[in-house]
Length: 153
Picture 1 (spheres, rainbow, N blue to C red):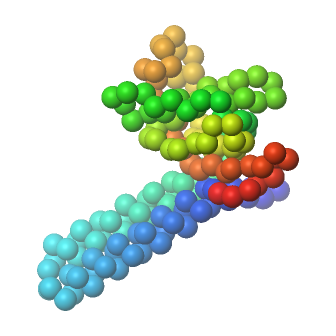
Picture 2 (cartoon, rainbow, N blue to C red):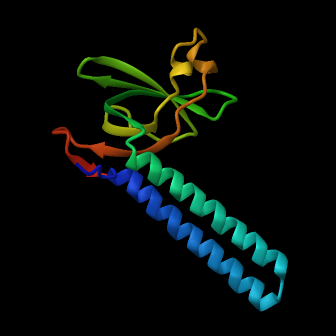
């Protein structure tokens, strides 16, 4: 059985490839026009970093090393002085709280399917408050309609 890559993660990979090609292409063109070796080396460094990031995302998606949370967003609270966001989802079996890195705008009361990287088992068994734990990396999300089908990404 072949694992398929979820749409939001595939969109993120495609956007990263396009951005990497555009930035690298612009840097190479600029370095040829200006005959600047430093800009060429920096463009190649950007290309290498982009390839590494795409490979990491692809491996995560291929190995299904992500968690999927689906439910209605009750609250989305940004933590002050941190680049973290706590999202509370109402699921069929209760509420679940997710600490996400970065800030993403979620519509309260809307149904979402959220894809995050799996959290390490060592971090799950600690007695620290959730605000002190590292947040999960958001890989992508889908806005769902009332029936649970995909509405838009």
